[in-house]
Length: 68
Image 1 (cartoon, rainbow, N blue to C red):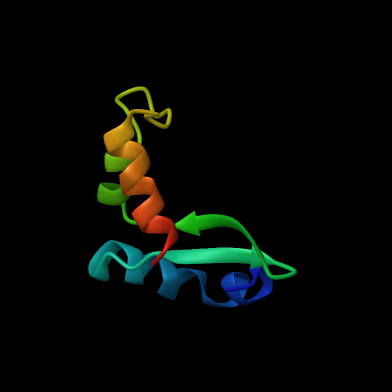
Image 2: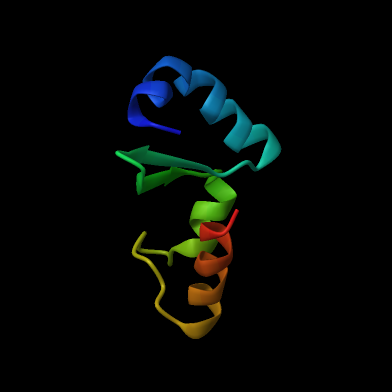
């Protein structure tokens, strides 16, 4: 979803992430910039300090999110 589309549909995208655990990638000129994910998915991908966990287990979880 482009940044422009996200601006128009932000409430729906947030709801889809929160309720349906949907991952939405935000793009600019076809390149992924960010993702809107549920709090659960974000917490699984980050440690208690909010920083990405670089352990092998969490890296594979992040990789699987990228392919959704």
